[in-house]
Every structure is written in structure tokens, then in C-alpha cells.
Image 1 (tube, protein in one colour):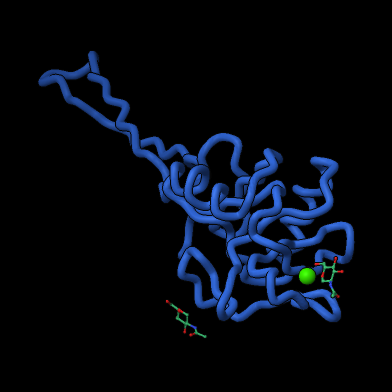
Image 2: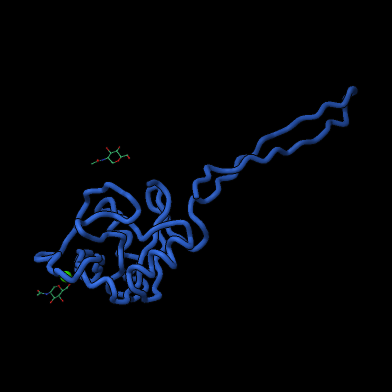
Length: 157
Ligand SMILES: *[C@@H]1O[C@H](CO)[C@@H](O)[C@H](O)[C@H]1NC(C)=O
Ligand SMILES: *[C@@H]1O[C@H](CO)[C@@H](O)[C@H](O)[C@H]1NC(C)=O
Ligand SMILES: [Ca+2]
């Protein structure tokens, strides 16, 4: 997903002088980091999908099809950005890439950022996490089979 930009060479020939000279100018066009339809925050790309599906289907049949995983959340600022995406879609919560036992990120992130709601996680049968964006962006665990919108991410591991 990572492109820093693309280089184009524009060349021409001078007519005035003999022998003719070829001159080139380089133009540097910035190319967006993220694929079309994805949102970019701090060198990472997030895709919010409002299609409601269970956690495993979201991971295996959606995010991995796009060569990514359900999203890890690394910081409060990322959580806030994701909250904005959920709220503008009129949704309340969405799957993120956190699951157990014990709680870890499906994309292999070692991020120790957690933002659990008070008294969460609370469920022995609730093994997948959502970010609940109606409630200060805090997280809950829910049964993984429940159907919810979800986030994929890509970019910096
Ligand atoms: C997490 O991984 C990154 C790079 O892979 C490393 O720089 C960092 O120290 C790790 N953090 C922890 C808490 O293990
Ligand atoms: C556990 O958390 C869920 C929300 O994630 C809540 O609906 C449920 O009532 C809680 N269960 C108990 C026993 O507190
Ligand atoms: Ca719970």
C-alpha cells in the first residue's frame, strides 16, 4: 500500500542551438498512501465497512481478501478518528481486530493500547472486541458470532 510518490520525466529538445540539446525536468506528484475509499491517519489506512458480519467472516472473507486484517488500534487519536467514521455512518459500534485468549491483535500488532469501557471485558463467551463509538469510543467484548460493521486496516504494521 505504500507509495511515496511517482516520478515523471518531461523531456524536450532545444531548437535554437546546434547541436541540439535534450533537457529533462522531473516532476514529482504525490500519490495517496491509501487505496480509494480508505481513510488515512498517521501513515495507516482504515476502511470502515458498514456491512454487518461476524468477526471471523469480516477478517477472513473481507479484510484478508483485501490483503489486510481487522484493524488494530494503536492510540487514542486513532480511536478518535475511527469513532468519527462510525458516527458519520450512523452506526454505534464496529468490530476491531482484538480477540482472545488472551487479548491480542489479529494483524500481529504488539500495541498495548486498550480503551475498555468500565466493567468490560466481561464475558466468558465474549471473545471478540468492538469499539463502541456512541460511548466515548470505549470498547466492549461481544460474542464473535454477532454481526456488526467492522474496520480493516493497512499500512504500518
Ligand atoms: C512493538 O514492535 C515494534 C516494532 O516491531 C518495536 O519497535 C516495539 O518496541 C514493540 N513494542 C513492544 C511494547 O513490544
Ligand atoms: C457483558 O457485556 C455486554 C456488553 O458487551 C452486556 O450487554 C452484558 O449485559 C454484560 N453481561 C454481564 C453479565 O454483565
Ligand atoms: Ca461485553
